Length: 332
Ligand code: GDP
Ligand code: CA
Image (cartoon, rainbow, N blue to C red):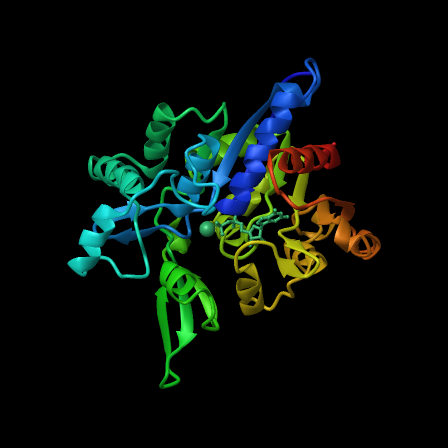
C-alpha cells in the first residue's frame, strides 16, 4: 500500500480537535498499516477572518496552528497558553479595538507578522507556509481555503426594523449569536477561487473528511467558494463527514444559531441531509453520528447516506484519535 493522502475540511476549535486526533491516530497506527503511512492536509475556513486595528486576523487558521503546535490554551479553549493582554488594554483605551474583542499579546505577534508579510505582497497561503516554518505541526499541512478575502457578514433586523449587517466577529463574539441572523453574506465570494494548496491537496486525495465543524460558517463557507465543491467531488476519494451535532445540540459553540438561520434543524440527520448524499448530487458517501443518535442510522441509510454511530465526543486526545480512526475506517 502506498501513502494514504487524507484531506480534511475544517473550521477552528472543533476542526482543530479533530485534526489533532487524526494526527494521533496516524502516529499510533501499527507500522506497515495504511494509516501509519498517511499524510494530512487541512483546508481551513477563512470566513471568520477580519481586519482589526490594521491587522489581518485569521481565527480558524490560528486555532489550528496553536492546537497542532501545542501552543493553545486548553483551559480557555482558544488562543495561546500563557497569554497576557497588556497591548489589548492600550488599544481599547485608544478606542482602536472594541471592548468585546481582546487580542492576546503573543497572539498579536502572529497578527503583526501576518499583516507585515501581506503588506510585502505575500498571499495568505504564503503566510501560512511561513507560519509553518516556525512551528512544528507534526507533519500536518494547513491551507487557507482561499487567498481571497471573503469575510462573513451577518444581516440582522435593526430596532427600526430595517436590515443591517455586521461583521461575523461582532455577531459571534459581542452578541454571542443571540441576535437572530436573517442571513449570512460571504462578501466577495463570487470573485474567490480555492487556494492553490487546497486544489493540489484535493486532486491527490485518497480520502476526504469533513470535520465536526460548524456546517454553516465553517464548512458551508469553504464549500461556497466557487470551484471548491466541484474540486471536492472530483477527487477520486470517498467523502466522509462527522456530525458536529450530538443528541440535538451543538457540542461547543453556537452552531445551532447558524443552522436555524439557513433553515436546518439542529440534528445530526438534518445536517447530513443538508450536505446531501453523493448518490443524489450531494456530498456525502458516509456520515458518522454519535452513539446517542443511533436511531438516526437506519433513516439516513434509507436516504442513501451510509451512516454509522460512534462515540463523537472529543474529550481528550484518546477519544479524538478513536473518532478519527473510525472516520478513516468508514472511508474504507
Ligand atoms: P470554530 O470555527 O472555532 O467555531 O470551530 P469549528 O467550526 O471547527 O467547530 C465548532 C463546532 O464543532 C461546534 O459548534 C460543535 O458543533 C462542534 N464540536 C465541538 N466539539 C466537538 C466534539 O467534541 N465532538 C463533535 N462531534 N463536535 C464537536
Ligand atoms: Ca470559526
